[in-house]
Length: 328
Length: 312
View (cartoon, rainbow over the protein chains, first blue to last red):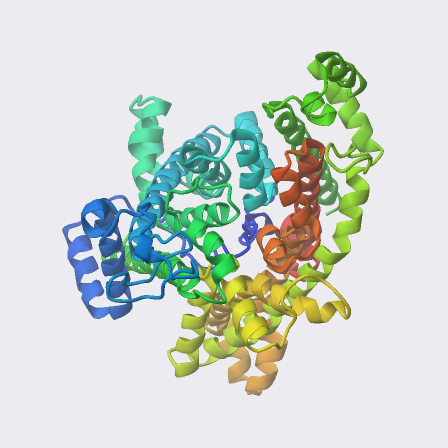
């Protein structure tokens, strides 16, 4: 395996149409040099806060994410109406959706339901799926990547060839096919995204562990008689944190887009539960007369994914800058 | 070099074999009884059992697996459960031209939109153009393709009848403009950022300073030295993209009503047509594996550094 080649094309992540590709070596700076102390340095958080104040774009995206989290958590209290309630005055005389007005701030949909309330409850689904799927995927990816990189030999070959195989399936088609087997439900959407997505992190983590295990602190720990298991989890793992954080952030954005795509295809979050992809899918037929049905969830999706990506960029910069400052 | 090529080829075969096996396991895991699906809901248990025997479903897993492999070796992907008497291979073969056309269009948009904007942004960092392309790239990366596609249909096909609403017709290129744009825009954004980053790296490297000190004109530096380095990753990624797109672009094909491989896969999933699902997923995966092999080999020839490291 030509793993030592600086930009071996195997590292190029297969792209997902529209879904953010995990930027590989070309975009994300190599985070392997960042010591675990970076995160616990007192000046890391003050630096992070300061850079946020000097970077209006990053500030806006972080604030937007916070707002989204608040809205998602307190959805039942914030939403003006029940997202499933079909209002009698939510449809015009001819039975068409009602345009935005003082009563329904973002209008109503084809069943007379309040779009704003559905949007707010949709944020819940998106964030929940995004965070849980990414957490699962990261756990699997880090475990497999770390074990493959640390143990090496046959174990590594088997694990990494398996990763290659899963990576060979286009991610969306893979998810769709898996859902076809397991049946659409929110739980299955999370599991399927996690199962398709762990591969990206497994590759990166393996690469980093390969170089980490040659470092002195691992040799030192071995000499002191520390077990392999403990070395992986107590000594190597903290070094992987910056990578896990950055990839995890991007992973949430990707998972949200995949969930929206699956729901758009009608095999994601089951109806009538509100999800942004599902709202776009349902609004499709009424677009010519009721464009707000598509614009509202679409803008929500774009803003969410955009903010998460921008926040990820900012996080990478801060981690990188702090590393340079403490001179490691 | 030859040794590396052989090893890489064998590795590709191994991955293809693994992908095939995964596809088999997948088809095996489907909870629905395939024989029942072929026979139809009204068929008697006897009829179902006889179909199961015909399909070889009563044999052991291993013997089914072996005959699955034997069939594949002959290019036989099986017969559709739903479309009466059609073979999976012929259906995919019929859908492939549309997908190929769309894939090619997507890749062209990626180059046309992504590369020049990346170069300009790198030459004038922090300028208005740089900021505008960065913003555009972020938008392109964040917009879900299904939403973007619907917006394009609404504004450019419905409001202003510039392009056909959906489907395919004559001339095909006319029907492919919007779908391929939707397909390419995310990649274009990605390339724009990638080209910018690599260009900045190359522009800062000592050998560029050297040729500049020698008095080489800026234009010659750009075309002879900088682009060569900055575009190598683009070439590889384009190859991967083409492989990925050829596997069928589910969402875009279904929005624009293009009867390609993605549409075929999607329809087969909604009807639970197992051989068709396995076939389309398999073909998509094999395209990716083979393209990544081709890209890897091409890379070796483009970049002398890689060639040297592999010659050892």
